[in-house]
Figure 1 (cartoon, rainbow over the protein chains, first blue to last red):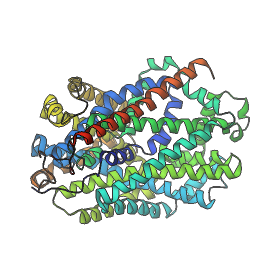
Figure 2: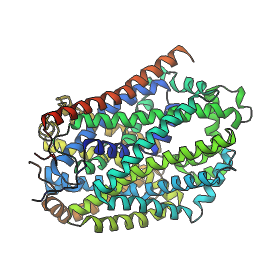
Figure 3: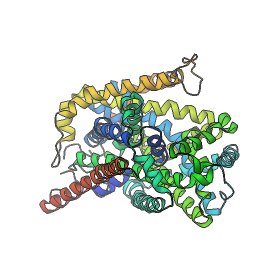
Figure 4: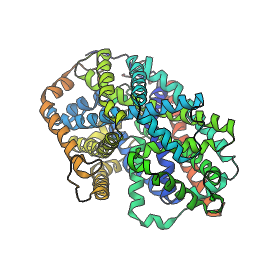
Amino acid sequence: VTQNKDLFSSRWELILAALGMAIGTGNIWRFPRIIARVGGGAFIVPWLLFLFIWSIPLLLLEFGLGRGTRKGCVGAVGTLIGERFAWLGGFVALCSTAIMFYYSVVTGWCLKYLFAAVSGGLGAINSADQGLQYFIRFSGSWEPMLFHLLAIGICSLIVWRGISGGIEKANKIMIPSLLIILVVSMWRALTLPGAERGLQFLFTPHWETLLDYRTWLEALTQSAWSVGAGWGLLLSYAVYMKKREDVTANSLIIGMGDYSASLLAALIIIPTAFALIPAALPGGADMTVVQQYQETVKVIQAAPPYQQYNPASTGLTFVFIPALLNSIQADFGVVFMVIFFLALTMAAVSSLIAMVELATRILMDAGMQRKRAILIVGSAGFLFGVPSALNMRFFENQDWVWGVGLIVSGLFLSLTAIKYGVDRFRRELINVGPGIKVGRWFNWLVAVALPVQFLALIAWWFYQTARGDWWNPFAVANPGTCIFQWGVAIIFLLIVNRPLARRSVRGELLSPVEG
Amino acid sequence: MSLDAILMMAVTMVLIWGGFIAALVIAMRQERRARKEGAVDSDGDS
């Protein structure tokens, strides 16, 4: 048994890397849109609840698996519950890796818009329609592929340098900078004339929305996708953590830190939008705030090119923000735009790094050296991301299939703990060393609440997209394409399970589980 | 702004940002205590 010296230098470095993993484009763009659409202030209630009954239990499971076994997803599950079940961890890894392929494309978009904002290339965008035309010209060119290559290249280089030399250093710069940018931007947004109408819209609680099951499912979806719990990413970082750290306090910091970034983003986007919408919409000043917001979204979605290209939810950022910020006083608008896309880029890069590390860890567990593994992961990341870079419908399909697949990943992690014995997992792998002890409530959350939430989410997402051809495996977003692609992935994993599990589980331990 | 919006904003900020800061403070105290007790060695595996 060899000692692995490439651990995180301290607890704070691990926390920064984990915050980098959790805080992504979903915080900066998705959360403000969702809270504005669903219930305003009332949305906070179910959103906070699901932090404690979905995200934090899954974060604890990931910490326990990674720290306890010192192996990535496949090796961790195989070590804990037997080699024949290693494919469960394989699915978690495959799901996050499939997301890495197209998330690198999104990171490339962020880089492109950051460069364009700095060079003044976004200055001519004065309406949502012009923003859409710009996005369509960009996405129809060779540039997305170039920026996708740049994104995966940067992240691969960081992971190449290892935990302390690469991942730790990158996150040490990016995450504090990101938080400072968000706080400064929030301050500026809140001091724009008319920003208080945005706050009014954001925080007015519409309690009646809590009676609508969709509010609860939106809150659960937001928590699951934003915190990144159950994706296997934290598990991969936990491999390199020190043994006696309190994972309960760490999970709280990561969950609350992710939520704090979401709240900051909402306090930037919504008040800015409300301060500027009267200028951006003809006759907007006469509308109520709710109408203004809804009208703006409608303007974007009704544009014929949007119907054709549908740049997915993330794409709306790139369509809407330049038009919005250009309507601010010229110089300030440019500065704000550079800052916004810098924040978005840092959030995306820090999450992509975690995805690259996850895939690299799997290959390293199978016996490969880090540098060879990263070469394979970086090259595969580029090649398999090319279809998403070139075709928006393919991008949207992958976003749908593997985005929903993450909920299955969460279930598989909870099944791993159930097979091992949830109470045993809690005692042996979570409540290790000093710190806050997790009580028996955890057993109930993992064994009952997580599977029930999984069923509710899957049923809801499938119900929403099930139309006449729900079975069609080649549709962009329906249950059929999910079942088909997950099925192919699971069959593949079952075929390679024996050799992969054997190598991952029986390979040389990186660091002794017991000291 | 209406009173219920102001109240909701205050409660949200206290719960989320306050929760984040409280969790950070707990971790900082734990680290300080661990350093005092010398419980964490160089690679943390003892």
